Image (cartoon, rainbow, N blue to C red; front, side):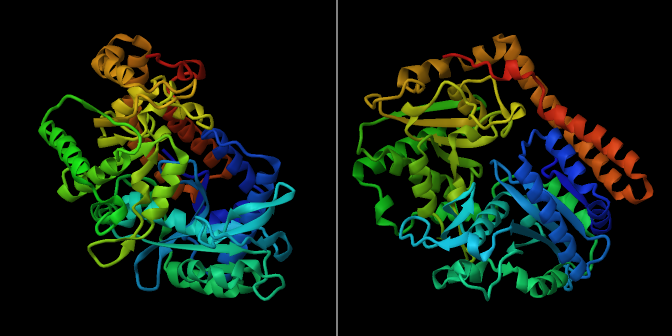
Length: 499
């Protein structure tokens, strides 16, 4: 599946901006991939495209440097404003991702926070009033970590560099909130360039992309396998070493070893395994689950394992605690990507049994539907949340307190979980609409590589085609790719399987 709304060589991108074809092509991409946009976002696309054209002109980049806009980050709704692809002066393949802002000095002010944002939060004028937002460099950091943790191209030779560019801002102006002293650590790691620093930014980009040849690099990233990196797995194995807060007490250690033993016992079993762990409040279910996740990584046999919960606060707090974990190469990396949103687990994101072990905490909060309110139609599933969690994982471990009060839309009880496990095959094999839905997903996964290759060949031959023919053929290919992601009607996709 294409992860971008727009892509072109530097030469063709410049032509699209000058001839006012950039926005129409962005709209085509948005329509194909169900990306909604407002008039203000369209205005932002136009401003960003003009500034990027000026930037890469100033950087004297080769015509075959590659440009993309609105890259969809794997396993989530995030999109990166702009990415540039090419070989650097040292011959290495480089990808630059840029967080673009139209903020000026008067539309940003400091927000003194001693909370979880660690002085990286600012207030910006958005929606007509000031509200807290992430510092641009913090957004870059988030994208950098996620791409390095999951896009295999960045583990296989492609070098990734994240930068922020606020082209209407003045680093020497007053006020100058974005360069306040308490942002120094994040700015040193992921630099922010203002409009008055465009020459310095252009020089940096030139060093990283001056040899061009960006199409092959773009294709490698675009078609890259999405899987946990070795660094992420090392971080998982090391994440709780020496941390007293996550140390297991005697009973918890016994429970952890018992659960891990059940997982090991069933490792060679081709059937799915569902384990239900019951315990009251304060018994350490979360700590046990996290230690099992670390142990799975240490064993090296379960490289695609995750912790999930419906609790946003719990997920956010854990990600903060796992921000910088020492790995075996004496570097630090974030293990936060192992903590996943429960709505990620559905057939659109994972093949059946693709996840080795899925640890589901606070399982009493499982809902009837696996679909989130912001899911696009092609991301939706007919499966209930319980069945979807079991579908995506080979071993699914539910940690539950049956005495916890649950909301009306939450259906998690140990009895419901047991019933769903016992009738899992029956539900998938006897319901014709579900069988059709899942078969289409698997069939379409096989078609995608051929369509992706066809799209890449078309892009490489764009210069020899008229703009009309190129857009027509690209639209046809992208429509076929879209159908591979949208096999059923919205009525079918919104229909839930009731427990």
